[in-house]
Each structure stands twice: as C-alpha cells, then as structure tokens.
Length: 434
View 1 (cartoon, rainbow, N blue to C red):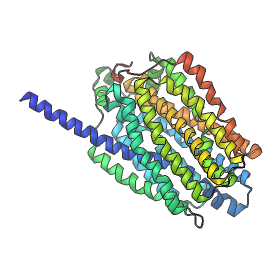
View 2 (cartoon, helix red, strand yellow):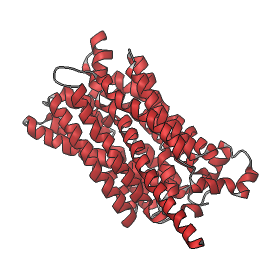
View 3 (cartoon, rainbow, N blue to C red):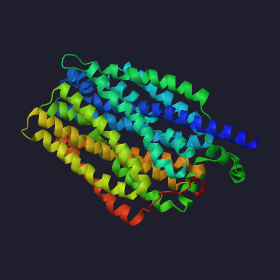
View 4 (tube, helix red, strand yellow):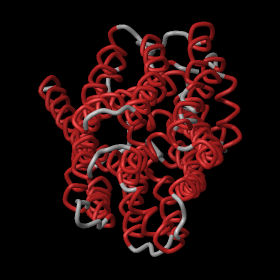
C-alpha cells in the first residue's frame, strides 16, 4: 500500500516536472522574443523617430539611439530587487509578475509615438525580460547532475521565440512596407495568457519551501536585502562569485553589437530587407546548436572550457562580420559570411550568459540564490549601460563597425580570470552550499 502510494506520488511528480518544462519553454520563448525583437527593428525605429522628423545623419541617429538604449538598460538594475523578492516571497509569484510584465511592456511599446516614449517602454521591458526567475525555478526543481542539460533543453525549446522573430519580421517589414509595431503583438498575447496559466497551475519550488522551513532562517526574521548580500560574500565561494560578476560585466560591454547589428547591416551592406530577414533567420536557428553544445559540454566536461571558448571566439566572429560588410563581395557571399559570423558571435554571447547563470546558482547559498542571481544581473546591466554610453561616443566619431570591434576586445580579459581564480562547479549539490 505504501509502495503504491509512493509510486503514484512519484508519477505525479514526474508529470508535473514534464508540465513545468513545457511551460518554462513557453516562458523562454517569450523571454527570447522580447529580448530579441527590439534588436531586429532599430533601423525602422531610428527612421521613424529620429531621421524622418529631424533629418539627422545616420551616424548621429545611431549615436543617439545607442544613448537611448543605454538609458533603457537601467531597467535591468531593478532585476536585482526582483530576484531579492524571489528570495523573500517565492519563485512562483515573481515568475508570474515578470511574465505578465513582458506582455504589458510590449503593449506600451505598441502605442509609443516618440523616441522618448519608446525609450521609457523599452526600459520597462528590460526590467522584466532580464529577471531570469525561470532559471532559478528550474534549477531548484531538477537533479544536480542534469541542471545544465535541463536549462539548455528549456533554452532550446525557447529558441522558438528566436525563430518566430524573422517570420514576423518578414510579415511586418518588407521592401515596400515597414510596420515595426506588429512585432509586439505576439509577446502581448503570450505574456498575458502565460502569466495566468502559471499563477493557477504552478507550485512553489521544493528548495524554497525547505529554506522557509529552516529554523535558522526563521530566527533571522525578515531576511533583509542587507543580510542576503552579506551572506553572499561570507560564502565559501565568494572569490568565485567576484570573478563571475567581473566576467558578467565584461560580457555585456559589447551589447551594442547585438542592439545595432541590424541597423549596421541595413545601412552599410549590400543586403536587401529580404536578405536581412534571411540573415536573422539563420542567426536565430544557429542558437539552437549553441544551446545544445552548451548543455552537453557543461555537464560532461565542465563549465570552464566553455568560458574559454566563448570568450575567445566571440571577438573573432565580430571582426569577421564587420570586415565582411566592407569587402567587395556579392550579396550572396555577404549574406553567408554575415549570417555565420554574426550567428557565431550570438552563440558565444548567449552561451557565456547561460554558463554564467548556471555557475552563479551553483556558488551561492539557497536562501540568497535569488539575490545572488540578481546581483549578477545588476552587474551585467552596468556593463551594458557603460558599454552603450561608450559606444554612443565612439559611433559618433568612428561609426558602428569600429565600435563593435573595440568593445569586443575586453572579452579576452576573461581568460586569465578563469584560469587563475575560477574553480570548476560541475556536480555541486545546491542544497549543500553555504
């Protein structure tokens, strides 16, 4: 009788796990799409809000737009507080909040009528899509030896969002028409519907429940932000945490490449809008392979090899993408080289972000895991803002291509940091970290 009861419980638990994975895939579809769609329309937004009304040159318009994105990235600073709240109130409620927020911010962007409004609503979108609450939820619910694999399975499912991006772009942006607002319709619908489903069907993670039931934590009372931050830097892995924060900062300094890549290809290459849509499709599809490689290698060979490869290859890929635009090649050859090099750069950037996420969760205590992930996101956001501010100035004087290359070079600093200061974290039991 007891065995039968345990068998039913195990079956129910397995069923919920599969259901959770499916739902989180849709969350990642939404997350990926809302992260990427603003990067697929900058030339159209710049044209409508800066060039058409003010008659600015392309370099000046790109420079101003980079400044607007820098302002919007301040929204990611609030991610730190979102993830602290995940430690205080639970993973589920914050997951619902951020999923709904992605849909609502997309709705506001649909109605924007000026570059100022667009920047404000993009600021709100950054608050929500950068929160990564789903990563915490998933990593606390899956086996310790399969964390990277399951994370990347969800990410691979979520690549549907990246694949839908060129599909919708080819519908709303063509050689004869440009309706960039159409790109917001999908996340508006999915964000609102998905948040309702999660609210009514998800339960709190087991590890968060254990943490709340822990007598020592109850004695701490409010579990304040100050206490959580102190706990992070009293941990036995504090040195590794500092290194991860530095790597996260460096990885995001060249965010301008992914933000204005579309504008660079539209204005500087011999590619048509149809070619750009094909390039975006190839770049999006290539990410599937990147996520798969990241998951398999991270679990089988460890996290450190991926840090090395992604930090070295990303600047090389960006240099190739920039040089391709300035070579006298046929449009077909330009399309192939740009798609492959930009796709490789994107794989490296996203792969590095994924490994950083996983390692962060593996080196911080359970009761400060949300705060630790939030601190990582805050530092990454500072990297984006600093990089975009620098790029705004650099674009004005040197143009987009040179700026892309200059801001990719700091990634090489990661190599000595990883070699000397970062220990391998593969196989760590999350419940035993203190």
